[in-house]
Length: 152
Image (tube, rainbow, N blue to C red; front, side, top):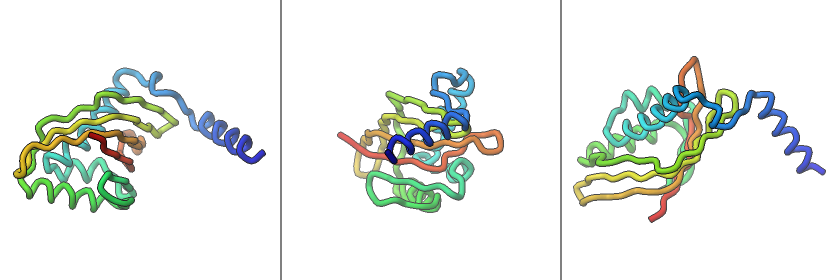
């Protein structure tokens, strides 16, 4: 009895929050959202600390493939600095598949990613899946959280 009630409450909450599938985003809205997503990834791998800090809000939380839940954007900034200081460079960034679920001012992206890097140790390729959360705050998209995994 509890499970159907919880499902009904969640469905009602999503509907009242203006939930809509990503297919109902206008082309301009979709392009804006995907542009912000790409900007976050590029900022990390190109050492653009200012952009990363602008797009990851103070309440940011992440689960990265290499560790436990990492609250705070400071950990991402530290990772950016370590990658930049190691001499690593972004070669290519691709998101082969992306599905968008829009729930009011929150967009959840279910995606696959492929990253090619040049590192002092040689070329490196990262590939996996991501669930990324974006929220429209003050008229613009910010990226308050993600969960990444990798596969070969």
